[in-house]
Length: 372
Ligand SMILES: *[C@@H]1O[C@H](CO)[C@@H](O)[C@H](O)[C@H]1NC(C)=O
Ligand SMILES: *[C@@H]1O[C@H](CO)[C@@H](O)[C@H](O)[C@H]1NC(C)=O
Ligand SMILES: *[C@@H]1O[C@H](CO)[C@@H](O)[C@H](O)[C@H]1NC(C)=O
Ligand SMILES: *[C@@H]1O[C@H](CO)[C@@H](O)[C@H](O)[C@H]1NC(C)=O
Ligand SMILES: *[C@@H]1O[C@H](CO)[C@@H](O)[C@H](O)[C@H]1NC(C)=O
Ligand SMILES: *[C@@H]1O[C@H](CO)[C@@H](O)[C@H](O)[C@H]1NC(C)=O
Ligand SMILES: *[C@@H]1O[C@H](CO)[C@@H](O)[C@H](O)[C@H]1NC(C)=O
Ligand SMILES: CC(=O)N[C@H]1CO[C@H](CO)[C@@H](O)[C@@H]1O
Image (cartoon, rainbow, N blue to C red):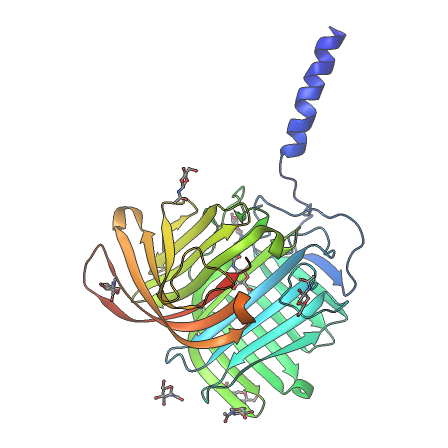
């Protein structure tokens, strides 16, 4: 009998430790978390299963030198001449090698491309970060930088007041398309892992972006296609990712988001999203739901750091009963250049659903990582 009980315990204990634990026990809203500028020295946990109230909140128990957690926002003008990406990072160079070496994990990155063809980046370092999570939305304050965001499920607003860096203004995201996780809608108990150890939530897959910024004496006042998501991992980015294609945009009445990555395990992981008239048509991480491939220029797949860059992408997205969406993406301008390993572009899109009428005039913002 004793032996029986013991062996039963040995069976159940490892099983229990496999159940994803949320590093963030939630205790009512609003929930406030402070993320110090100095990396945490110990081990941490990362959330992998969604709850009912942390869609856009912090997903790590703390940020150490091997982990990252960030809030990403972008907007591109309809004429593709202007774009702005603002990423509120909590990460070090050791977990996201595209950041310059620093001992400060609390960093705001502002990436801009101006109508005169100039693009650039400014990094602002905070003394601490305060995140408030309430009703599935979040607010973030990067203390000492003048940069913050304030969100509700219906609207987000970013404010930056950093004249000493030549940057000030506001960026509003309005009328968002419905939120989602990599494999399904934004409800509790969804898998939040889009690839091994890569967490992803997408509270604003598409929105109207209203920008009123001054960047280096250049006034940016425009309405465009806007987006907000967040990524996190308890392991360094470069440990799990071999390459990835991500992008979002609007084509006719469709709001689309694509994510097609190769892990360092050699496997391909995808996540597709399309919505129309405020309703989700597809949100899926089945590998049959999406294929993204480079086209034109160096169209080798899988891509390699020793190769060049494509001039476009072809996207095939399964819309279920609604058919198949085929999109040709053609790059317009490079708006962030991280060398051979990282590029972000604005692009035009054309496509059709199940070989129906051609839809033209699509606007996209996309990126490519190549790490091997
Ligand atoms: C830190 O950044 C530098 C250049 O920005 C890069 O070469 C290096 O690989 C990064 N370090 C790590 C540990 O990734
Ligand atoms: C945008 O760029 C195009 C060329 O690609 C140019 O013809 C047009 O004037 C530009 N628009 C603005 C507002 O700068
Ligand atoms: C937050 O999202 C959950 C699903 O994850 C939903 O049940 C709940 O109603 C949402 N709360 C608010 C205030 O929108
Ligand atoms: C943009 O910001 C400036 C300075 O704060 C303000 O004077 C102007 O009215 C704003 N424009 C719009 C369209 O909100
Ligand atoms: C473009 O505009 C920015 C901001 O006003 C300015 O700093 C830059 O020199 C301009 N670039 C060119 C090529 O005119
Ligand atoms: C899709 O997943 C199935 C089952 O895991 C696998 O057999 C197949 O090779 C995958 N296809 C692609 C294109 O990765
Ligand atoms: C994409 O481009 C290819 C090559 O130009 C063309 O044959 C195809 O019809 C285009 N597809 C769509 C959906 O626009
Ligand atoms: C799928 C995914 O995780 N995508 C986001 C990760 O972070 C970058 C910012 O570097 C965003 O552009 C992606 O949307």
